[in-house]
Image 1 (cartoon, one colour):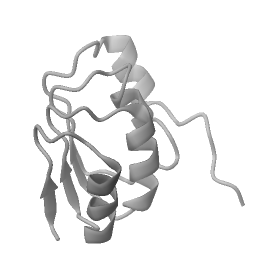
Image 2 (cartoon, helix red, strand yellow; image 1 turned 30 degrees about the vertical axis):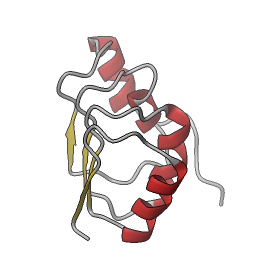
Image 3 (spheres, helix red, strand yellow; image 1 turned 90 degrees about the vertical axis):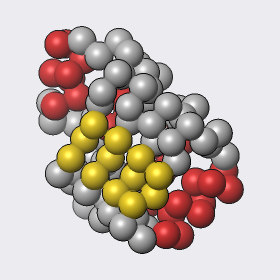
Image 4 (tube, helix red, strand yellow; image 1 turned 45 degrees about the vertical axis):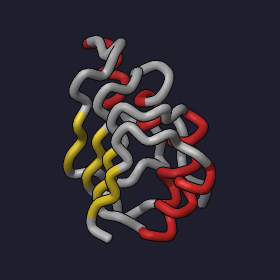
Length: 103
């Protein structure tokens, strides 16, 4: 699969596991109920994802999760209409992750 579009879908464990099975290079999670726990579980399982769209989500509740070593190396990130996205939040997002991979 090249792109999985879950726009306005209610995120469930089944939907997440199906997405992982498809191994998309692009993932659209616009206007979903995606939370930190969901994204923390999903991102390490999609290492080849290059495009990610998080339109309409909340920075504090979801998007801040991207600042981890488990986030795939993205080429495109859409943060349109992300609430609580301040200059400080963007700086934190673009900073080096505080965690590190074992080994």
